[in-house]
Amino acid sequence: MKPIDRPLTCAYSNHPRFVTELMDFVRFPSVSAQPQRASDVRRCAEWLAQHLWAIGMEQVQVIPTPRHPIVYADWRRTPQRPTVLIYGHYDVQPPDPLAEWYSPPFEPTIRSNDLYGRGASDDKGQMFTHVKALECYLQTTGELPVNVKCLLEGEEEIGSQNLPAFLERNKDMLVADVAVLSDMRILAPDQPVLTEGLRGALSVGLEIRGPKHDLHSGNFGGAVHNPLQALCEIIAKLHDTNGRVTIPGFYDHVRQWSDRERAYMARVGPSDAQILQDARVKCGWGERGYTLYERTTIRPALTVNGISGGYQGPGVKAVIPARATAKFNFRLVPDQDPGEIYGLFRQYISRITLPTVCSTIRTHLMAKPALVDRNHSAIRAAAVAYRKGFGTSPVFLRSGGTIPVVNLFQTLLGIPTVLMGFALPDDRMHAPNEKFHLPNFFNGIATSIWFLAEVAQMQEFRVAQNWRATQLAAAMM
Image (cartoon, rainbow, N blue to C red; front, top):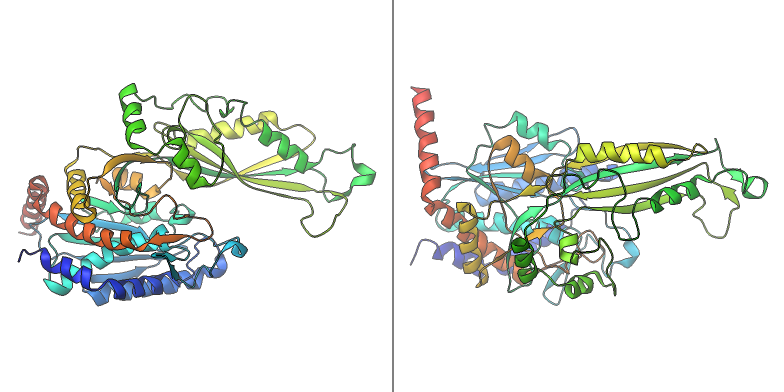
């Protein structure tokens, strides 16, 4: 029997228990954006820490931050071997609108081989594949093939606001050869994907103010500029008829990709029809000259996430509201900088806001785009792991989503990140009836087991780790 056979056998024989434990994990309403859920987020972190300790991880800690805690654990008994940093997040999106859920969001339910519940796919289920892989090693062989550090945060869904400072303070503790992260989609249960690019993000809020208080629309309608109308007029000026963002300078640093790269994307990426089917819409929209896959990955976008103003109750109320607000989200591509885009947005809003109202802008999130080197040895290890875990080789795809930590790992810790997803395009992340396909959960555990084994065999990792061990020994003499 090969050394890897024992953890793989453990994984296959414990599928029912692993699903039960994942359901326990999903039950925590760990919504990081809602202050009233802070205690639930904390309880979830404590449960996760206890679970890591129970499976054999060491140095388990629940580390407070100004908002939600970070869970850390490690296993470092073989200094001559490489070190893998496993990242994930245990916080989830708000479940609203609740009326659209077929079953309560925090009462996980299995239907047709899918586990339904908020966070089942994003990111509790995907992250849990690595936790279970660690357990399968530790409970059968008593050791891991590599050194492992786990960094599991509770603020990813609100932009990882306290993570940069934490990484800066704990660089020495988080030294690793490679990070692995599972918080993205694959194409199908039989077609895994290595994500090679993520868009950056900028989220802002815009408030338009008019009169000091609500006014009677009969007495003042037609004489006073309605802030809600003014807001809609501003929104209408943010895109042209071709779907392009009209902010001056917005496209100045957008990277152009070669015909060869675009041809590869067309060959392996989802078709327009597939994307429309996943979105449950009949027609696409956006910047002309690009496929829907390109529009959501290599082209930037600006979306309106919410509008509020005026009377929202039943019936009618004849008022001109004193204020109106909107929330916007930019998705940015290499080489766009969110700080620069924020400045351009402020200048443009100031220019198109009429003197009849006042505008105020607040920023909620800034995250830079990230690219992964396809030729890195860790990516080759992940490709082998996918092939053995799923039975087929992965393709390279780009994601339209944003994961702030990937760029932070590159810039602050100087380590590459393997983006190894297990979710499906129809898992409804951030939407009602979020789910996780259980065969992907099981194949993900096997893939993680293989990934750790493959990294252990990478010669360049061994050389780097041995050099660090020698330097540490010399410093202690």
